Length: 80
Image 1 (cartoon, rainbow, N blue to C red):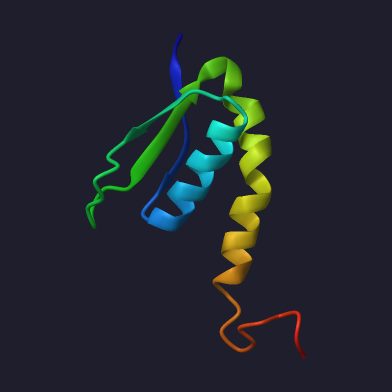
Image 2: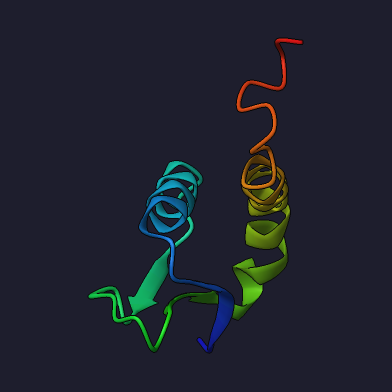
């Protein structure tokens, strides 16, 4: 089995959420560089045959994390 990179991140919160999702879906993974440095991000590696499924599982999480970081004007977008 060959491991492929799913995602690299400096964000410990994002890393924890993605690990939790993969655990819940019984997708085996390995984290490289989990002891964060400011220079090299942590990378989550999954088996090649699980890569597309894992990408589908985290795509909504990634987009919500990205959009949430751009909401400085209104920290609670549900409230006008």
